[in-house]
Image (cartoon, rainbow, N blue to C red; front, side, top):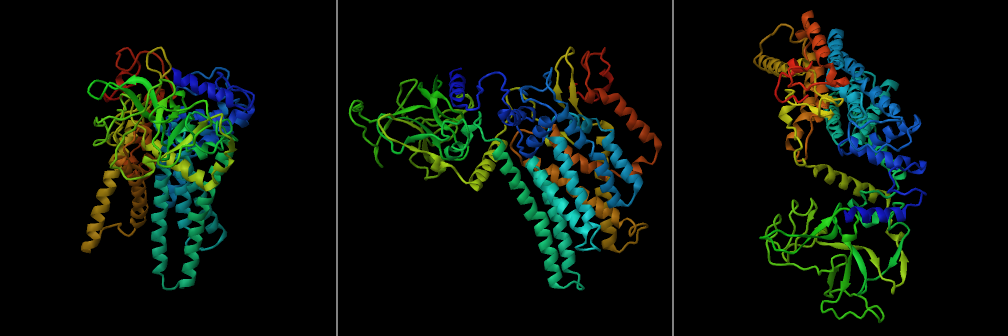
Length: 613
């Protein structure tokens, strides 16, 4: 592929660390973090993360990992690579989930049996074990989410000791965990919203306390603003400050960022570069759309299909490529290449000639396949999943309609330094977030890729294949313990029913036995139900591709909400333990015939046709 070859030539030429980026293995320690943190995107299915990749990279660095494993496909053998430190780090954080669950439920219910039951549900859940024992973002995300909830409930218990050491400790630790949750994934916003709602109710209660002066209320308000807003924001920006220092080299994702952002990346052709200040006829240029994460004006030899016009496709491409090069010419082809350079002025009409194919850029009065009422554009399916470019005189001026020249080559013109392009920290922080948000929302299912639906998750309808597809391979399949998940769903329904009945009885003045005693149960359960809703319902309005593992933060809340009365009979414990024993090969790996084969040891466990182990 010419595009790939062109990219490798550029990066090989620009690398300054003594190792060729195009080589199979980059062993230079100066590139260790850059290569490893970028390669982790392959393992995590391109989810947005900054803190997690740095933490895993640090764990690998401290335990002797040399950064040379490519992380191309889950299930690839590590061979001689030292991966144990990274895997142990994730497993250690995942093993904190049951103790966190125990402490949270104990604080909310004041019941030790209920806390033991909730923690045991996670211990015997095959899905939690699978996520916790591999190098993934999820155990780190769930660690910070549960840490945030634990700090929140412990802070609530300190309300009679305001501004004491333990009061400040749990408040500030909650802020640290909130910044960690958001630093791992954007879904950390859900637990931030949960803590925010809890804090709002707490402040509303304080405002109604007539024994508290307005000055004291102001102190409570400022303390929470500092601990739950200012501190997390400071830590979050600090994470990105470290991120930008560590990942300061050019990589395959440069094209997603603006020209000014790229000028700060070592190895990028804009880093410490010099180019002509003005544009002249006869210059060789690349043109980039000003929209953040906008692509380069690009063309390739493929033609539009019949009915769209048999002309060369023109797209916007997010990566650097020789097919992005254009020659600036006069519209009448009267260029004098031997004389002095003639500058292009504002309002001039120019012609762009594709450098590789030697064809002029032009438009026709054909309706664009995707963007209607505009002229010539490619279809994503026709343009190798590149971005559509349209031509219209009716669109108002916006970043989508503006382009900047990034590369400018003209040996007849004097050069100036491009160091003036380097952006400030706040500018690169803002741009990186816009790129991440657009990249995350733009993740769509590929051909033949299974797209999980949110309604699948609570009923354990379909798992997720981690590795291996045939009977000779070592297979790992992500699937929750079906008995635990279905009991969690039943408990959610029972709690909503009990809460509804209790609310109606209170409204009607009916005295129910144990109502006052159960008030604490309803308050704590209501918070857990809200946590489940906040971590589950938003996925119904997301347009990006979804996976089964996205439900696990919500599953933690449903497990904590499971009523202990269901497990009063010891047969339930024996049943859950036995089911875990039957399904544990899904977590720890299995070989042999697939489950649909009667000879398979897992044949009798395929209770649903959608389970593909």
